[in-house]
Length: 190
Length: 393
Image (cartoon, rainbow over all chains, first blue to last red):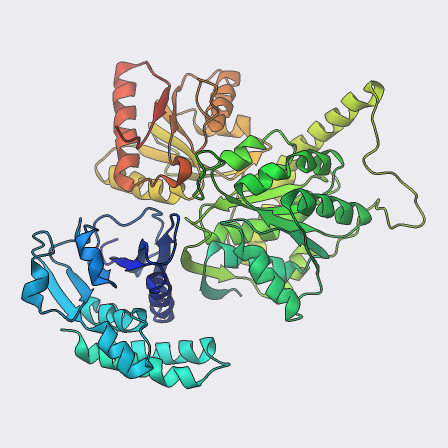
């Protein structure tokens, strides 16, 4: 399965990393891909470290194990860098995206010698500005789409809008904020 | 034709239930099967089904209510996992011995203890002698397809047995994957109306369900139950054939994957079969003749067919995601080895315990098992037929 992309999400319970992984599977499915989106479950509670995964490819996916050598890693909460080996097995041709306000040079020290590309985004800033609340998963979803190139940004935005219209049919006022968060995040990731 | 979608295994089974539109669903939530009654109760609330949904106070009551409803003549189903099914224990036997074709969506989860919410097959394997038909799935598609085939098998006049449609907790129940759904009308036409021959609400025929059987009758009842289980194998094949006509997806008693000329074979159940297929492909590219037999139907156990399918292998690894604590291996190991013995097979066999309590199984670990099989074949004997895979040391 040469063109399969594997993504690992690190977050804390309550931040929506699992939801983001399922949304990514959803939107990639809409572009005709074979997808997997799944969480790794333990005794979850608010604030505990959690992991979620995506596989996206053009052929049927049969493997049902966790992902040990991801192409991309998304870190939804930068405090995890101190406690979780987020770059473990991460391919050096791949990349890691971290939600942080810190400069890259500062962050690099915490990546346990990872040699691949590092991208950062201040998802808190984006979320507060676009939504007025701190939901880091929406900006991180846009960030990983941009970094991984699993789909065109235009198509991503179109599909997300239709997904939000379906999901928030009873509260359309939140659609605009979420779309703004996605668009801002596509610009802010660097 | 089918509709392409992406769903978790739990969602897929809940949709199958909606399309079937059963008469009664009593249920009590337990991880990781909770989403099934959760989704289904929203279908009830939205008027998408006219099912009587009974929120009960325990799994013991869920199965008791299912028995009462099914005996009354209503098509009934429920869902559970692990300790939830353990609490149904007594009723599982009552349902089966009363020959009530209840469908149970079982989302496999380890039994306590230590307490654990993740996947293994200890729950359904523990219930293997309860007299229920058991069918297992590799992924969300198979869980959905198997559930749609459940009632045509269970309600068949030659069978009349309850049926357990199993899938792996979290691994498939909570993973969103691609799936092809049938149209509601196709499912309804396939499953048909439930017209039981004998039922409690039939005013023209008074009957008792579940009376005491003295020693003069008990054994005959068991023999009839055993005969029904034997009959189920042929019905499973007939239903699968009809299902292929509407879906294009073919099912048998088990799936053979690159097994025909395999020297090194693996017998496995559930989601790890997908992982093992990737390992088989990788080994085949290196010239290793690896192959796979994935169990679909575990009860009744298709022993002759399995022994026949494995007859050309040099050595076979039988993978158990459940411990029997018998000091001899796991339940699938016992069944397959007995099947080989009865068939006078000369195939060497070894039993692996893997994946307990959600322990992940990777492609490279499956490949290691095949590597060990090559060594076993070269040695011409199995010194230790009871092994653990992926145990931390």
